[in-house]
Image (tube, rainbow, N blue to C red; front, side):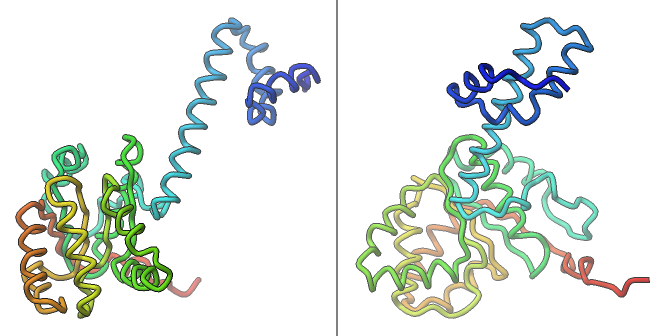
Length: 249
């Protein structure tokens, strides 16, 4: 197989196209065998490089946002024994709710794919150049508590207020104290009609009230969130049952 010349390697590296080098000999061989026009060869080569860079950029942004790479719509199992409003799901995939600063509540019992969908929406948003932050509510509350100790709380809250899409996974799993309630209240209030949230929960928002430490803040945040949210309700058995390991033959 013909190796690229030293001069070609040097030029590609100076143009920051060094990632092409490992596969370039094979590409050149195929181009010669097919007698490809040089312009067509360059177009294919550079188009694939653009796609590779876009994928790499998306992967980096998704990692920074806290999104799991495997939780995308292409991995969504349509054979799962669950029910939901499919028309609403397709509407949400357009991300018009994000442009209109509406929220999304994904609610249902454990194991029906709530986290999967939340992350998948996050990946879609990044593909369309929106900023995203995704985190479990429990982890976020613990992290904000630690931020108070090193005086970074306000800076972190500002970052969470300004991101285009804030995803809180598994909200209202347990009772929250007054400070935790205050943090959630501030985020919901600050993002009302100016920024979108996706919240997953095993509970209906009406059940959240008794879990927050401050009743007045609880009523306000639930009212603001619920009346600006599209509700995707999923029902069915846990998908994790299908992933239960079985003894090998």
